[in-house]
Amino acid sequence: MSSVKKLASKMLEEKEFFAPGHRACGGCGEVIGLRLAFKEIGGNAIVVNATGCSEIIASQYPYTSWNIPWIHALFENTAAVASGIEAGLKIMEKKGISHSKGAKVVAVAGDGATSDIGLQALSGALERGHDFVYICLDNEAYMNTGIQRSSATPYGATTTTSPVGGKQKIGQVTWKKDMPSIAVAHNIPYVATACPSYPVDLVAKIKKAIEVKGPAYIHMFTACPTGWGCPSNMAVKLGRLAVQTGVFPLYEVENGAYTVNVKPAKLKPVAEYLKIQKRFRHLGDEEIKYIEQRLAEEYQKLLEKSEASAS
Amino acid sequence: MTKAENEITWKEINIGATVHEPGNASQYKTGDWRSNVPVVDFSKCIKCALCYIFCPEGCITKNDDGFFEIDMYYCKGCGICAEECPTDSIIMKEEKE
Ligand SMILES: Cc1ncc(C[n+]2csc(CCOP(=O)(O)OP(=O)(O)O)c2C)c(N)n1
Ligand code: SF4
Ligand code: SF4
Ligand code: SF4
Ligand SMILES: [Mg+2]
Image (tube, rainbow over all chains, first blue to last red; front, side):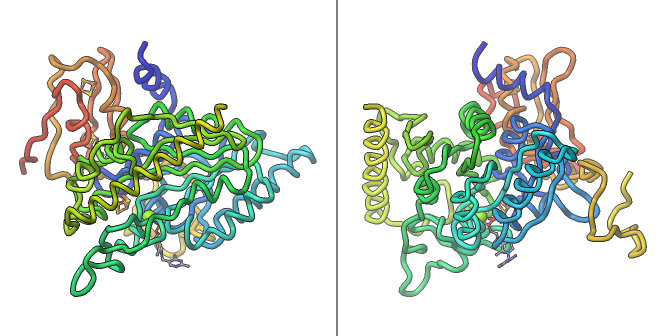
């Protein structure tokens, strides 16, 4: 049986922990990621959700899309709330008063929530070694409030706060913050990048993240048709292209050892990825060449880390 | 059944606006957001399940014959299933009415 078929039959056995009726835009990549992740995580989990699209689309009072316990958190304290719940569960279990034996604490937050505003709380939680999983849903801007740049917005992308016009010719002028490496620098047992366009890889990583003792960080690349300016059927294709062009390599870091999980023999021209999205449409050949070179360099560095880990 | 937001009075709101019915968003219809509708031709389908795996709404289910069916109560017509189907068994048509 192919790995996709195996995944499908396993998914069919589980219920939808992220129920339909949510209010994400049609074709939203974040919800594909959430759906897949929680099929694997299962029912014995507590979700701590930072504000952002993933939260507001699923918690319009009096409704919830979550079929498991869920708590709203702020940008600033998502990882701190998760830490507190994890510590609480531990002590309750010790005292024999736990209602949720073995429950896994899973924090879910956007790229703005993770790489900007919640970074300090996240760093603290990773450093203290709480046994929890942190999932960053990276759609490369503050989408929920109308597409403002974050430190995860890629070089060259327009957002409402990195606009193109007048002297501003390229949109975002800074390179995307390397959030997974920041997580790795905390020497936690598990860090991985993932993308719903590679569902088998994604689910395998979620499984490892859940099983590992201590903090696990998953950085998930989730296309946003609304914020990126592309048709609503493109989220899966864009994720695939991001991996194949080196925009978002898929790798994991287990106790410091790097493995690149999807290794294109040759990176595709990045224009194939950029051209589908309005946020990049102003970019000229020169900027595209710059992006391509830099991506190739970053990818090379990653391959070297993985080779060094293997030797 | 949870009362819809426009039917609830302030007296009925739980303290902390907590929600006690898991997954009750499933009451909420998103199918009327659709402007395009996916149409599946089962005669071409190879039951690969990719449409099921990728649907952001989780509104595709397997029927007794092993084919994947779409629940139009939720389908937003995004077109991902049609785009990802390897056999072009799904096409998007304009939603009538
Ligand atoms: C401290 C603070 N600043 C601003 C906001 C307003 N706000 C709510 S959601 C959001 C955007 C979230 O962006 P991100 O974390 O990337 O998640 P996304 O919506 O893109 O999934 C903002 C700015 C807030 N709730 N708290
Ligand atoms: S704005 Fe983007 S991330 Fe947010 S719900 Fe819409 S498609 Fe999803
Ligand atoms: S059109 Fe989109 S929402 Fe409708 S069934 Fe296909 S993937 Fe799901
Ligand atoms: S993606 Fe296409 S071929 Fe595969 S199960 Fe769905 S309809 Fe059938
Ligand atoms: Mg975001």
